[in-house]
Amino acid sequence: MEDTPLMRQLTRDHARRQELEGLVFQSPERTRIITIANQKGGVGKTSTTVNLAAALALGGLNVLVVDADPQGNASTALSIEHHSEVASMYDVLVDSMPMAEIVQDVPDFETLQCAPATIELSGAEIELVSMVARENRLRNALQEYQAAREESGRPRLDFILVDCPPSLGLLTVNALVAAQEVLIPIQAEYYALEGLSMLLRNIDLLRQHLNPSLVVSSILLTMYDARTRLAAQVAQDVRDHFPDQTLETTIPRSVRISEAPSYGQTVVSYDPHSTGALAYRAAAKELTTRPAP
Ligand SMILES: Nc1ncnc2c1ncn2[C@@H]1O[C@H](COP(=O)(O)OP(=O)(O)OP(=O)(O)O)[C@@H](O)[C@H]1O
Ligand SMILES: [Mg+2]
Image (cartoon, rainbow, N blue to C red; front, side, top):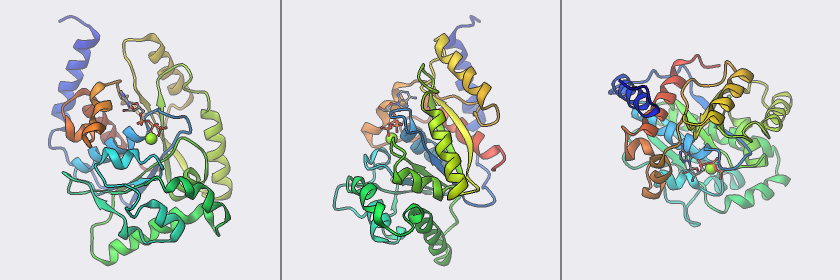
């Protein structure tokens, strides 16, 4: 058989399909709260959040997506209502509304839920500034929500994934204070590592002052084009710098991934056997099998 990139992809997809078919993921010992952050725009934060969440739910786990980005892209991708009248993360963060009142079920998934963001959330960035414990609002809200779930006898969440806006403002800070782990998506292109040191410096500061247990547990290479030498070079650079954190799975550039949101779907539900869906499902499996920090 010819060894071409296409042939390699087909072979890998086939292997992944067999490996993932019907696979039930192992539930973590405690709820893992992972914030997906990178202040660089358009690197695949939202695609990663919703598709990992969908893949984890497909593997039988209980998952909550928190949309902490006023753009509301994660809410859109999950087909969650988020026009300006909908109760959203704005009400939770600014008006202390219990999260149980805003969380919605994601259609087509039994164990996936989403706390939506509306455009109001853009005001929160400013309104939070003058508030008491402004950096801890999401952390407190999530703790209350988890306790309320337990009290009402609902199953414990296995994963909470928080999607961040492309900035290091108070919304991202809230997300980083609420989490135990950060997952950084990095687009495999030339400027990939620019800005990363600033993100890491900020995470260090947060660790010193607000959340000592925060770790960068995972780095995921996104929009990876195996045919270009540049992508391979960037991937190698990232792996050299972060050998323990970088997931083995890379997410390929894929039209299916980019078109799924226009159908209000994740690629995992829209076309579960496509290369992109299989990659996210493999990444989800990797996430559940690597030791949690
Ligand atoms: N693997 C991929 N292949 C092709 N297109 C992709 C892939 N991942 C993401 N995209 C597309 O790239 C664009 C940016 O992706 P996404 O919205 O996930 O990034 P983001 O980091 O959340 O952006 P923002 O910083 O604006 O929140 C979107 O149009 C998305 O559909
Ligand atoms: Mg986004």
